[in-house]
Image 1: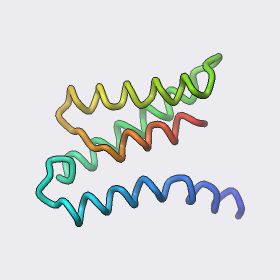
Image 2: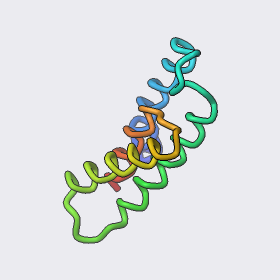
Image 3: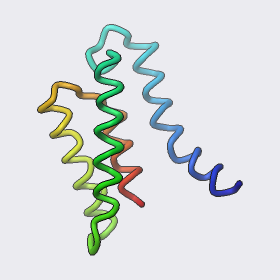
Image 4: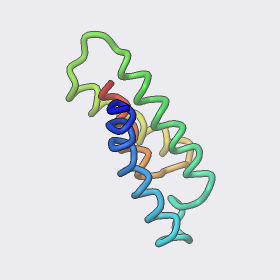
Length: 93
């Protein structure tokens, strides 16, 4: 039960940023459904994959996950800023 609360506490700020974009900047490209869905999936997947990398320090995993996630989102045209934060959170392990 405490683990569940701690996990929710870590992920909720990312969704706070998502809601701000969704309702405050509805016309912005980062707020479009395609960017939200693909951006979150990319950020989460990269963060989880990098968290499994053995031998990397926490600061390196977090930096690398943010850089790779932003690069992938850029290349795919699905930039979504909260997804970069999600990659950092998930890479922490």
